[in-house]
Length: 242
Ligand SMILES: Cc1cc2nc3c(=O)[nH]c(=O)nc-3n(C[C@H](O)[C@H](O)[C@H](O)COP(=O)(O)OP(=O)(O)OC[C@H]3O[C@@H](n4cnc5c(N)ncnc54)[C@H](O)[C@@H]3O)c2cc1C
Ligand code: FES
Image (tube, rainbow, N blue to C red; front, side, top):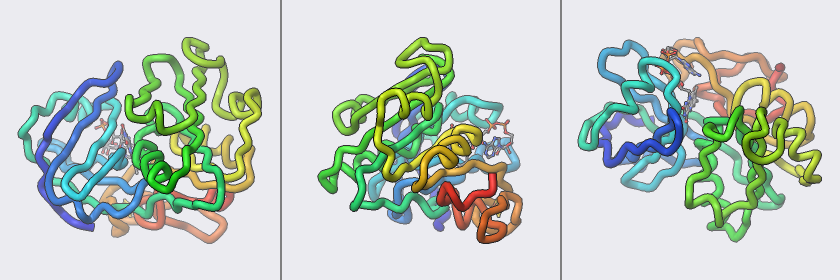
């Protein structure tokens, strides 16, 4: 974990209420796909945890959806603004190379998967991405992703792709899920973990400190209580007591 000051290089609206922001500075502490950062926002007491969407040694990209006042403020931040961030938080995904990975995203849960897809591509593997959202406007396929993964999409209202959820889509299209990596709403993660044998889920929790000190983000697992910010946010799907 490192406390750094990062500068906003760009902040673009990519869909209704969804923004892609590039932060530049010393980001060498980010080591793994699926980690998150915790951003101090002026006039807000608690930091806001946001997944690393993509990263290099001098930048982090984040993809965020306006949910409340904090993310609304973030959407209005201008290029050049400095943000204090804790980076290098959480464990991240365990990138396995002996399987054909299936990435399963729900809504803004797509955020960590750009770096996961890039990582697999660098290893010569084109992953499958199963991506669901409530409606078409909530689906954000970043241009770079299109050639890098086999993408299957669905929406709850049928406005894009098949009408249904990600588990329906996987069954309907006979996608073989040998090992999955999932990120999205809690109920989606629960359904995925119960439908398929092996894989990892990235959980969200209301966070206080964000680095293991307050126990505010504990969840129940088969191995006792665990902190989403420290032992997570990625857990084995079968380990979580849903
Ligand atoms: C590990 C992790 C990764 C995340 N990654 C992303 C991401 O990549 N993109 C994205 O859009 N969102 C992500 N979220 C959710 C994001 O943190 C919340 O949407 C954001 O904190 C809401 O802040 P707000 O001020 O706009 O909303 P408000 O509702 O006004 O926030 C009120 C308070 O609740 C807390 N809070 C609200 N929702 C959440 C939540 N789901 N998790 C934790 N704290 C919350 C806020 O920190 C704040 O203190 C992530 C959450 C976690 C835990
Ligand atoms: S948020 Fe404090 S321990 Fe996780």
